[in-house]
Image 1 (cartoon, protein in one colour):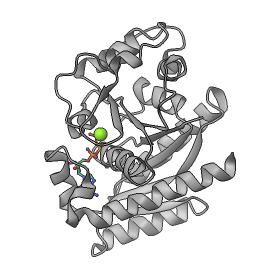
Image 2 (image 1 turned 30 degrees about the horizontal axis):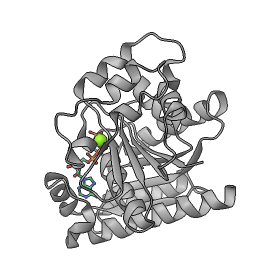
Image 3 (image 1 turned 135 degrees about the vertical axis):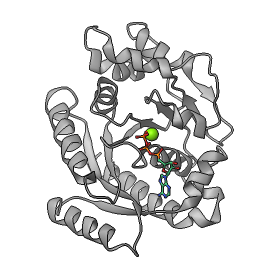
Image 4 (image 1 turned 120 degrees about the vertical axis):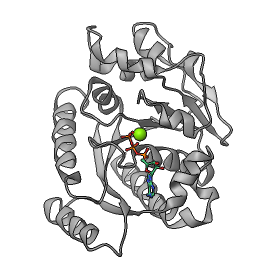
Length: 257
Ligand SMILES: Nc1ncnc2c1ncn2[C@@H]1O[C@H](COP(=O)(O)OP(=O)(O)OP(=O)(O)O)[C@@H](O)[C@H]1O
Ligand SMILES: [Mg+2]
């Protein structure tokens, strides 16, 4: 079974998309995996980061045609990033939130199950910043979730909400869902506020794997250039921290298998 990983967080702008693309690039370059990135956010930032503009078919079509077997394959396109493929998003994807269809939260899961993904080693799913039906689709389709928060006050409320939602999904509709840990992004070690939030995270989630992902302006530069953060030397500490996350996910997955 291929890895199906999602980065989830309720707060906007915490770095779910940055984690998604950095992870996809890491799996593809360091582990030579064929990676399918699925953009489930109508803002389509992941699609833009991977250099996709004006796609012909998107996850909007896939969810709309969710009863058709193999609908996902028609939306998958190559990217300029080696070994990374994309099922892009578009703004209209937001309309799928309001669909009243059977098993509405399982549409992405079904799309993955009925697609030909025999050539794919890992699926990385970017989710929107809300506990919306699209995010529920991401958590229902994934086997591994990493919660992403920023290092500011209020970020931890979002963590609790996503965790409890994921726990319900794991209980009710997706028993394979595993919460791999919590990533605190945009962390600035010179800021006492961030250090306090890290301590607080440790107190609240003592038994959980936790990672600090450093704040590096080059991450945003990479987005502007539609390039992997790895290509920017000053994003190095962020890239290395993401590798720890990926190593942990792969190692604990092997243990669980
Ligand atoms: N570690 C980091 N250091 C500096 N900038 C970062 C870092 N991570 C992300 N960013 C930048 O912060 C902005 C928001 O990040 P990103 O788009 O990944 O967040 P998001 O959680 O996906 O947002 P949304 O909720 O809108 O989908 C982007 O400009 C991104 O390049
Ligand atoms: Mg995003």
